[in-house]
Image (cartoon, rainbow, N blue to C red; front, side, top):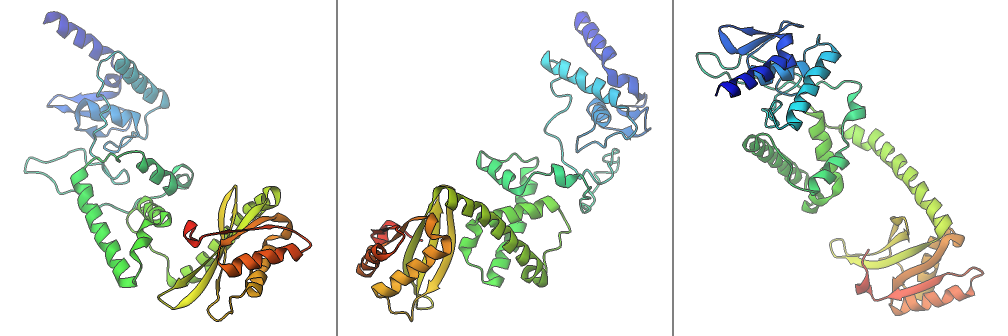
Length: 332
């Protein structure tokens, strides 16, 4: 026993945090930082985290020199590698708002304190450079279960948020399958990253500036696809279907290339005579829109009028292949 005590005392003696904090003789869990004078009541763990910084349950010392942070952190890493004090900086911390003032006094003698409401998260100029993209966060979630600090609390918060989102879906008459869109999940993550106090876009913002930005973004993205079409060629995919809700016949056109598929156009052909001549002109217009030199083939269903329209391409000065499949083989 004497040997163990001596070893423990020797380890404590070289632990650098002791040089930079003053213990309270009346409370063994209370220490005062020598740099900023801030008292902490979380014991050894809390004062070490206060010196090193970067922990949500302990406010970083604003006056601690960088070499001291490195000294305390390096000592911890040495201890961890040697199998000692592996929980000096525990990972199962209670998460608090890093932008609120830390309440180190904890619960008073009269009982536990009620935690204050969270303030809106303050965003600094550098946050936009280091914050993870919502898309990347969603990809990470697909790899496994997301670890939470307080699962019970988070479940209650999620239930409340889902209830409000569902109510918005019902009120706006949105189709339920909209919840399966990747863009919906990305939007929800972006709102969560903003934090409390998010002001949603107004109707004017949705109709004018945001819509304009989205059109420009889509056009810029389309330029990359057009370069691919000119370099490697592409296929035009055509598929007809009937919208039973509005009782209209619709034909969808997509362009496919090694880079991927792009929606090109949708035509209402309810009032159009669907003979071979009309279909040929419709297909040929799409070819001219993409560029005759870029189109390798046109893919349609195997209805007789489409098959006949495909034969008309032999009369053209430029050639592309018209491939007909059963309508059940593909759906656009």
